[in-house]
Image (tube, rainbow, N blue to C red; front, side, top):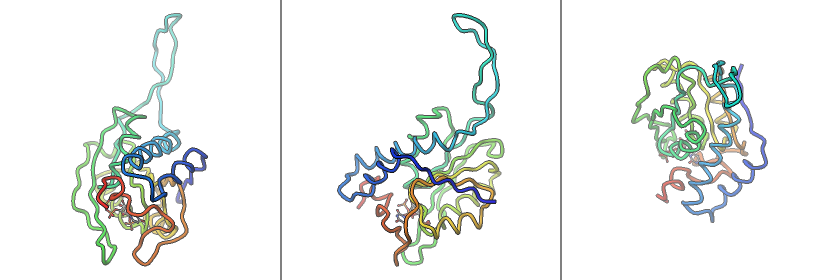
Length: 209
Ligand code: PRP
Ligand code: URA
C-alpha cells in the first residue's frame, strides 16, 4: 500500500510560490529550497524512533527520550537534490550523506545513473532521498531501485513539486516507500517539464540557465 503525503502547510505553500516565480534569482531560490526541505523534513521525520536515557538536570535525575539507532542517511539525487541537503542537515546535523547522480536524457527523458556513493550499513539506516522535482518519475524510481539494491530498506522520499504522472509511476514501482510532496501540479508538457512547475530546478539552484 503506497503512502503519499501531500504536505499542507501555509509556510510551505508560500515558499513554493516564491520558488515558482521566474523573477526569483539564484541566491533566493537556493535559500527557499533549503528552507522548504527543512520544513518538509520536520513533518517527514515525525516518526523517528527514540529510546529512553537517564540524565541529570540541575534539579533531579530523570529518564528522557533521545534518537535511537544508526544515524539516518540523506541521499540527494544530483544535481538538484543537493539543494535540499543543508535544510535536512539543520534538523539532523550528524546524518550521513550519500549521493546518486541521475541525468535525464534531453530527447528521450529517460534517466541515466552516472554516480553512486552510499554510506555503509544502508540496511540499518532511515534513508531520506531528496529531489525537488518528480516529473515522469523515472529518476526517483530508478534511484530508489539502486538504493534498495545496496540494502536500503527504510526509505522516505521528499519532492517539493510533483506531477501526477510521476507519483503514479513511483508508487506503482515502490509501494513500500513513503513519498512526501510539497505541491502536486497539473501535468507534464511535451518536454516532460512540470506545469506550472518552476522550470529546471538544477539550473535555477546552480545558476546554469
Ligand atoms: C531533474 C530533477 C529530477 C528529474 C525529474 O533533474 O532534479 O532529478 O529531473 O525528472 P523525472 O521525474 O522525469 O526523472 P535533471 O535530469 O534535469 O538533472 P539535474 O538535476 O542535473 O539538472
Ligand atoms: N526536472 C526539472 O528540473 N523540472 C521539471 O519541470 C521537470 C524535470
